Length: 133
Image (tube, rainbow, N blue to C red; front, side, top):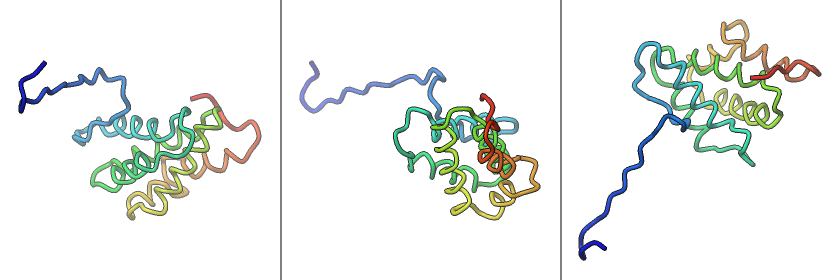
């Protein structure tokens, strides 16, 4: 038991199992951070879209650097999942990015970009088009 007026601090150690992303923006790290953010926002266990996580993804993609392209690539990979819950959350996330994204994010999401988001969205409508991720 602690004395009156003192505080007990508990520090939880992140073992890397969480989907929180490193925001350092270092070279070569944005893909992993983007994958982690998208995975958290599109987790199959979510009953409804996590708008806090969705807006965190949007904010991440709107920052400088190659983050928008890494984010778009992560979204395209998740859209190809065979799990309908993941795909549904990912469609909502793409929609949030399109509505709230800056010009760089919109270019990364657009048709003809190297990310393949538009092509992946088109593939969702085709029966049997999904693959396992």
